[in-house]
Length: 143
Image 1: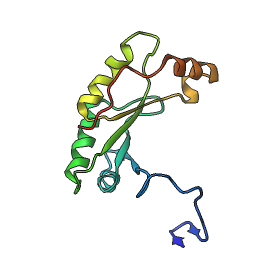
Image 2: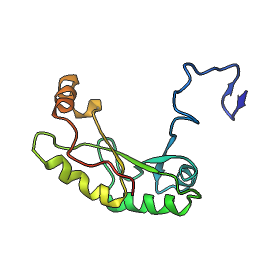
Image 3: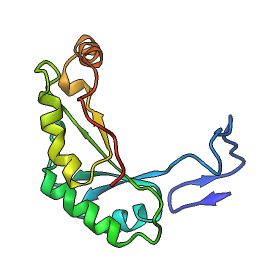
Image 4: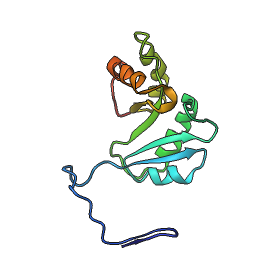
């Protein structure tokens, strides 16, 4: 049983169980510059920040992501791989442009780029067109 201030959960069973052992990676979100979520994220497998100064459809600047990464890494107690995930929008229509847009984030510590395909970016056909264009030409890496 889990008991919180607003919710009590009993008798819950998650099925099917993940194939990965000991468990699937846990990525924690947080709204920078609040620090507490990033202290928690440091104890898990990754962090996916947003920023209080940016609204829907806007991505924090690479310098701000660098501050998130530095703060979170300072609180890590493990040398296990740690993912840094960010959602943003690239211009897939311009060859190579997406990679250029994401490169400064890689330099700041990014390991996963999530291409934003929300309703604010157009309709379902626009999202499908962007998916067909494929990801920016980037190498995924663990710094």
